[in-house]
Image (cartoon, rainbow, N blue to C red):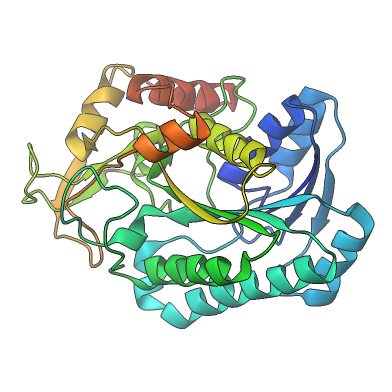
Length: 334
């Protein structure tokens, strides 16, 4: 299959690229490199000995994107491109609607023009908002608490309307991806200060930052810190593979949670890191951030049953893979 990845040079996109190539698919990446570099693509090509077609392109640029489609002729699209910081979206909502929603509309126009009828979308558990019950299933009400979550829900609704007749759209609602490929050649390496917990902890361990800030210790959880469903990035991209395979037998719009079904708190994550590294992780308690929820844990029965997908890796495996990635990239641990 010929698969086009938007945002394919990023954290999740690069891991998806690697797994797709392992499965003998042809891969084309479009990425504006706003929060990534070309380095993961170069590393994957060297590691897997397979050609990756790459164009530096913003998905909002119709002519450039259309040229890629005309030359590569993809069968399917996996759509990772988009801004992803909850806190930034609260400060700059218009930026998120313009980039995420309008960018996706432009992508769908190009797909229609080139008769490409299959798309798998990188959605988010933030579409649920404050959970009314746990674990959260796909029938839970959709009430995002921030512009980032709103932009993801808007795109889901657009895809639901777009996927008629012979078209296929699948929204995968990610919970919290962590980890790195077992090879250590690629991992999470965001530009600037990380907005996610786990890469920030790695930078504290590596003494790039003095301490970790824990936003809220008075939540209604077992230790007061926020609880999330952390899923290994390899498990996450294998869910995309399962959705891609199902596209031959499914039509119209489908949505699936992608998580483990188990929650881990911030303090538990810190303790897991401590079991691998021989140093304390300095932290400071801070007030809650706008838009954060106390707990978010996935019900994964639907994806287990309908796509025959199950997560394989636990928190310890994910953290071990992250440390392997950092060690192999000459990061210093004490």
